[in-house]
Length: 311
Image (cartoon, rainbow, N blue to C red; front, side):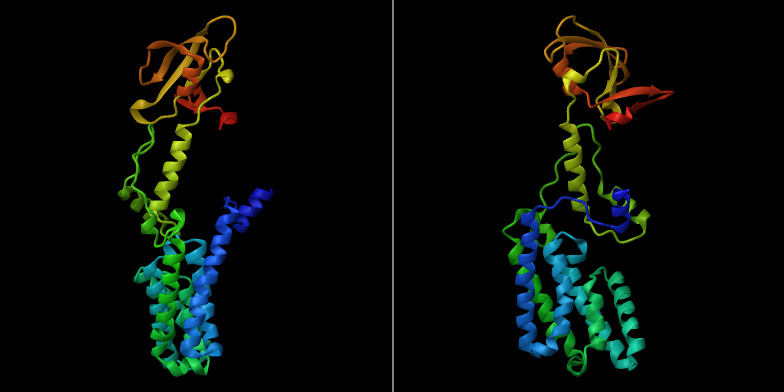
């Protein structure tokens, strides 16, 4: 019940180290420090506060989730600048704040979508152009350059420099990409076209990059590939699968085991009952068989299925 409630509420359950949390917080200190200095220099401390609030949201993406597609350089720079431009334009043409504020945010989101630079803090940047008060209104379109462009540049430069020493969180995300390894044995590689098709079927913006998805797939499949059964859990007469795909998939049944101590080095006889090598047989140690096997399976009409307790 607790797990279902956490899922429904969207509570993050993935483990993150304490070091990563502290690095994120310290990065935000450095980034916003640069923004405060820039804003104070251009507008003065009081008038700069609304702009700093907008950049504070950017800091969450740049330093807490630096691999997020929403926080990459084009998203940050393009999102803020386009939103500032939209916000100033709406404010100049619609004097009524109650109408201009929602229209500015909605138009900014639409523009960011079309220009492929969705950046959530951009909504705040557009809103500030409408409700920022006399100091922001007096800037007019200069608001796009000073302070928005300067602040975006400052926080981007800090993000690049601050994240550089940490290989797992280099920014931009492209700097941290490693050469893609072949798929783990027994697992089919995923082509770029397949990812594009899958994402298009969801018809919504997914806040994870293709490279991160491929990395997750690679780590998961290699972990599964390195997982072996315990030789002591093998059972005479039971069927086991190697868990692979395509022509390499196979099911073996243990048909005989030497009498006496059935330790990991004892000999057993198996026959291949499905998949690659069907109708053949072989002899190996329990340790070798357990290294080959991934899980116990049973025949369900025309299909082979894993036992629920082995999942």
